Length: 152
Image (tube, rainbow, N blue to C red; front, side, top):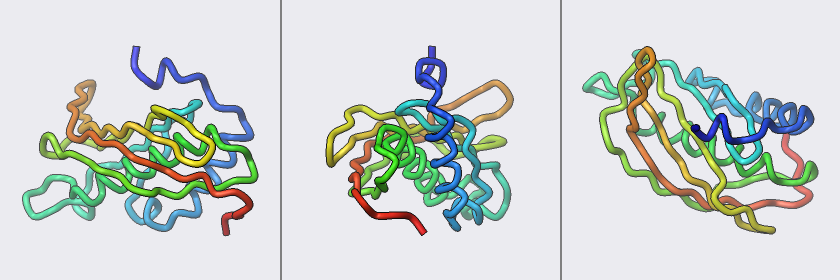
């Protein structure tokens, strides 16, 4: 069983709040990324592979891979935060394990520990070609819950 199957679906209100926040992210829109799953403490984001997001060897650029991984982790944490809060990344580290290739890149953010102020998430990114998923990156992230800070 993978994280998507084990993470209970987030409430409709939480899913709406996260989708609205995601829609405000210019970088995700620019990259062509989309959220494919919002569970409690687990979010998946997909990025189609296309020339605009590649590096000089034709692989999806590490910056694009890292950006969707960071965003997946941030929203995974956000699923567990109260409605009147916001989320900010404090730090993240990512290890690139294999070339980022496939029809799409899928990033998975999963909460490891949710705290009152800081939350830690596991980040994974997969290159997907058909039914085959290859782990291309793994990392860890620390996020901060910000109270009374509305999004624009």
